[in-house]
Amino acid sequence: MKAVIQRVKNTTLSVNGELISQIPFGLAVYLGVKVGDTPLQSTQIAKKIAALRVFCDENDKMNLSVKDVGGEVLLISQFTLYGDCSHGNRPSFTMAERPEKANELYELCAKSLKEFGVPVKMGVFGADMKIEQYNDGPVTVIYEV
Image (cartoon, rainbow, N blue to C red; front, side, top):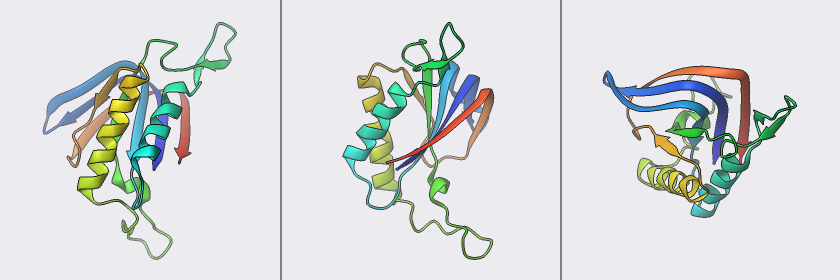
């Protein structure tokens, strides 16, 4: 399981022109699920996202988590994180988990984040989503478990 975690301000997610989710500030998390990932990994990645200290404290040091600053997480499923483009120019997605299992683990990650005390907004699994994101920093962290 892989997450691309970006510190953001005012981020929106729409499907077919309809606003689905919006966060004023926090983390935009793009979550990829690969073949063989487990519920334990989903919970582990949620725990890391909730505790990741990428927000600045009073001394301008990245020392606070999204929970510490009262931010939210916009969790976005993205199977293309497991695109392999090492052979040719067209990515292969054979390492990406089947949609049914991937959605189950995506939903579990959201549930776990909420249990860790982080407000979560979600995308629409499998949809063609349009995301407007205002990166803060920019700060981007890639985490794989």
